[in-house]
Length: 90
Image (cartoon, rainbow, N blue to C red):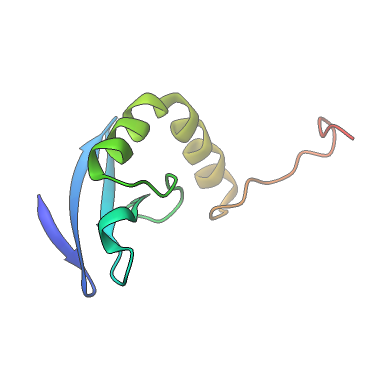
């Protein structure tokens, strides 16, 4: 579904059972700066030069971001994974 995020155009859709927002940032580099994040802003994707590349990344990395969401929702954190000092490599 096409939508807007503030002044920026974007799309919202479901991938892997999760609502994702895809935003084309405004400004001088608008045509090359797409961003993605879950509706609840608990995780996101990398910046990309196209919507197609960003959607592909989200689809291809489902296992990774779904695992992050489980941890972050379980621990109540946002964008930062809690550190487990028992397993942290030095």
